[in-house]
Image: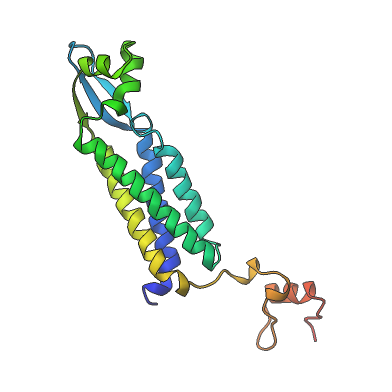
Length: 196
C-alpha cells in the first residue's frame, strides 16, 4: 500500500501524538524561575507558561478523532486548522525557549510572591530556565505540522468511510457474491429480501 493511500492513518497518528504530547506537557514544569531575592525557585507549568496549550492540544485530539470519519471537504478544512494550530503553538513555544519570557512567568511569580506588574516581576526574576518539556512539545508541533501538510497533499486519495456511515441512496446495493450479516441488514433496511 502506497504512502498516499495510508494518508488517513498516518495523519491521524500525527494528530494523536502531537495532541497527547501537548496535554501531558501542559501539566509538567516548563520554566524554572531563579529569584533575585534568594527565595525558593518558582516552577511554572506548561498550562501557565502557554495559556492556550491545553485547549489547543485537546482541539488537535478532537480534530484527529473527527478526521477519522470526515468526508473529503472536511479533511481539507481539518488539515488547514491543524496546520494553523501547529504554527501558532510552535512559534509560541519557540519564543519561550529563546527569550526571557517574563510575560509567561508573570502570573505564577505574582501568585508566589504577591508582586504584580512587569517591573516588579522583572526585579524578582534573576533567570528563567526552560525544562525538557517545551522542547518535547516543540517536537510535537513539528510532527503535527508535518501530518497536516501530508494531509493537504493526500486528502483526495484517502479511502472513504465504511458502509456503516452511509445511509439511504448513498449506500451500495449488494448484487452478487457472498452476503455477510451487515449486507443482509442493509438490504432489509432498504426493503429488499436478502434471502432471494
